[in-house]
Amino acid sequence: MNKPTQAIDTHSVMFITQRPEVVMVEGKGSWLTDNNGKHYLDFLQGWAVNCLGHSNPGMIEALNAQAKKLINPSPAFYNEPMIRLSNLLTANSCFDKVFFANSGAEANEGAIKLARKWGQLNKNGAFEIITFDHSFHGRTIATMSASGKPGWDTMFAPQVAGFPKADLNDLESVKKLVTDKTVAVMLEPVQGEGGVIPTTKEFMRELRKFTKENNILLIADEVQAGCGRTGTLFAYQHYGIEPDIMTLGKGIGGGVPLAALMATNAAACFVPGDQGGTYNGNPLMTAVGISVIEQLLAPGFLDSVKAKGELLKSELLKLAAEFKLEGERGEGLLRALMLGKDIGGKLVELARDRSPEGLLINSPRPNLLRFMPALNVSDDEIRQMCGILRELLKQVD
Image (cartoon, rainbow, N blue to C red; front, side):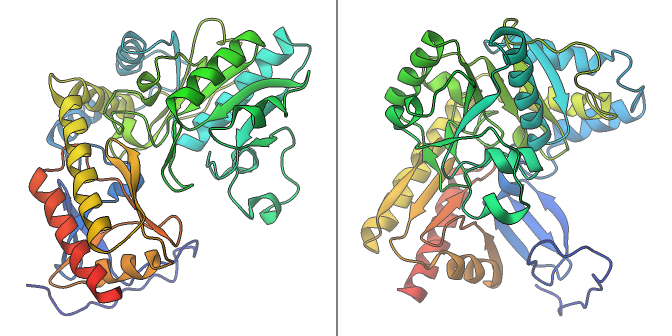
């Protein structure tokens, strides 16, 4: 039973986003509990961060064991978890080198720097990186400049130069932007913030062919789509291509601040002094990362993600047919329900405020909902979420 609402004093917390007047105090699996004792079925999971749900036992065990042993010897030294996680990632991908960071934006900053350094060494100082409209690469000045999010070009002007924008799944729009200054193309295999828009296999394969033929690096931003989210360990593996550089965030830490910049030997051209950071590759976070990746690689786990993705897809299509919506799209357990009308924000509020149990979903665009559940969400929880959504759609229909 929910307790009476408790007053909370948040005056010292910097205002950066609209938050409801509740405090989340506990989580387990696909469920969150607030300070009033109310439970929420969580299909946000920290924006695809908690890939193994809240309070995953394996992660907790890794965190506790490492905290008792060594937390941070400084990045001036190797540490065991850093080495183990690097080897685990390269053994299961097409990449040879790993640099650990603390957020997806930081990893993408590193990718931008690495591409520009490669351009200095191999393409007469080429520095422009073609990105895409509606893309999202982070909230630093450079990654905001790289992003194609409407309005961001003037928010903290002037932007960092060198990020012309193409149209996703349109190779001709990429070709039109290529000059002797072009060093790379950077894209998300599935545009998350842009509205869960998958890159088509034909486009990705043709883009990889074109970039190879023109000595242009291909950077895959897998901060949201990577680490099992789409049903393969890395999203690029759906396409039968190999990028030169890839970034990971969110899911790689399962909820703790961890990210990675990965590169092939041919693209990995940093020298001492080019890249670093106080917490980069610290053993506490990389120990958790090992637990996450090992759980994702456990026999049958990724197949179960694909199956759960198909279940979520089919349940969303039933809702689309019942309420005459526009359909659904996505890959694996990163999916969107296309509403056909601007009711996304209202549904998010109704879902959160529902009693006795709330539902946490997201509306990156007013006309759609996005779903990013834990990769080990149960079939029953998927059906329960869609049942709640059916109830809410009747209220706004």
